[in-house]
Each structure stands twice: as structure tokens, then as C-alpha cells.
Length: 342
Image 1: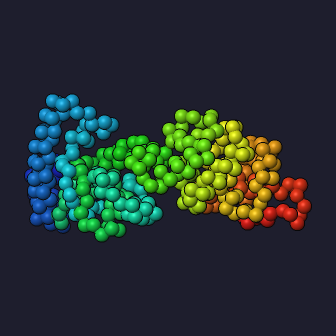
Image 2 (image 1 turned 120 degrees about the vertical axis):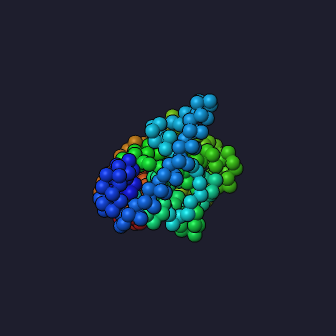
Image 3 (image 1 turned 135 degrees about the vertical axis):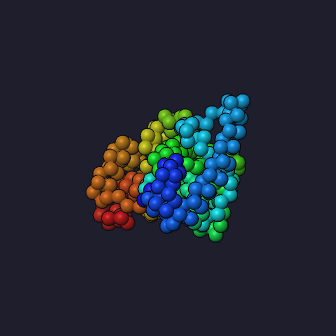
């Protein structure tokens, strides 16, 4: 049986003429001749509409010089239309699609925006029971729409794609560069988002500055790790960000912070977990030890105790424990701060 998404329609029609309806239907996996004829009619109707739209698209492309990007012309010309489709007609082909991430689907649903949804790329697959559409790009968005209870989704529809072409289009649409966390943070700043603005104001209060484009990587006072600043803000607000940067300034300024995310995460974790420590004494010891030695000790701690938690949590715990080891050095046993992790 030939899969519906890769059916050779020309061969099917030749077999109808050569073998007859009943034999052709059996050969191509249809339940009966009527189902086969219904499928052929649906394909012909869709193809006629497609040919008219493709002709119009080609005329516009010729006049305006439209460049469709990396998608091969033989696939781009098979773009049928952009329509709102019923979600029940959308299917996911796991022969080339990744598994759905329930975490990303929940996050997307929680922060849903139709403005950011765009259109799902789907491949039209006529069947005897009606049209089905294989989702090539937008599986996570589809999951979020289902979770939110929507019954329709905006789609751009391709037709007559083979399974190989579907997989090729999937790769092309998913390998394009997505905006990183810093890019999105910069955008959030420009539109005045409250959290991003609080973070900016907080670091400027202690004479640091945001550098999401990473133009000043060798300047101690420019922070490039937006993701870590936001993680710290979520844990302790602007107060924890300001306390973290004040300690870093007293200890390491103006030395460049090569492992900036790890240092930010480690210091904020220490301030939160060990408030009983004498920060002035710790700062003096860390400055004498040097940041490179503390980073080396954090790597050794990770090698011994393993990794766990989020990336910020991993960095924070390891560097924090390296700071604690430095603090406890040459202190009497009764005056040492006990680790919460070992």
C-alpha cells in the first residue's frame, strides 16, 4: 500500500485505465473503487485550485522579483494557499517530526500570543475519508492550541509533496536561526516590558550596564548574560540582583568576567543560601585567590558531586560551593559555614 502522503497520482490514473477500477483500487490500498474515485476527484479539485494560484504567484514573483529564500522552487511552487483549518484534520508524521515537548507546549500556552503564532506549515494529504494535513512546522504551537481549547489554526498549505519533500521542508524551516534569549530581552526592553525594565534599572543603580549584543565582553561593568539576570530576578527580585553585583564589584572589578553567567549564578546562590557568612572577609579571600582559581575549584566540585537542576542551578551551586570552600579555609572548625549541598 502506498502511503497517502506520497501517492503517485499519475501512476494511479494509468492503472485505472490499464487494470480497471476494482483492480487499481486494490493495488493502491483503497477499500473499494468508490473510495479511490472520491480521492482522485478531491486531488483534481485541489490541484486545479493550486495550479491557478501557482500561476498567479509566478506572475507576481516575476513582476516584483520575490525571493522566497532557501526553500527550493519545486517545493515553494507547491504552496496552495493560507487558510484557517480545523485542528481535528491536522496530523503529525513522526517519521520525520520530533516528539512533542510537553514542557514547551505548557509554556507556550501560558504565554500564548496570536501575534507570535504565525502560520503552521502543513502538507495536504487527500484521503477517502476527506483531506488530512500533515504538520511540517508548528507541532508545539498545535499542542498549545489544543491545550487552550481552540478548534482552528492558521496554516499555509502545500500539496503534492512526497514524504521526502515533507522531511526536506521540515529541515529547512527548522534550521533557520531563531532569536536568542538576549535578542528577545532586547526586544522586551524596547517595548517597555516591566520585568526587563526593572532588571535594567536595578543593575544601573550599582553602576553596571546591559550589553545584550555582547559588544563589550572585556569590560567588567557590562553584563551580557540576560538569562542569568532574569533567573536571579525571579529568585530574589531587584534586591538580589543589586546585592550580587555589589559583591562582584567589591571582589573582582575591574577584572573582566570571562565566565560571567557562572559568577553571577554562584554569587547570587551564595547570598541566598549562606546569609550568615561575613561577606567582607569572603570578598577579601576570593580576591586574593583569584577568579580563575575559584572557577577551577567549581569545575572540580562538579566533577565530584555531579550535575543536577537547571543550567543556572548547576553553575550557581558549583561556583557557590567553591566560594564556600575559600571562605572556610583557615577558619576554625566551629566558625565554618556548613554546606547545604554536601
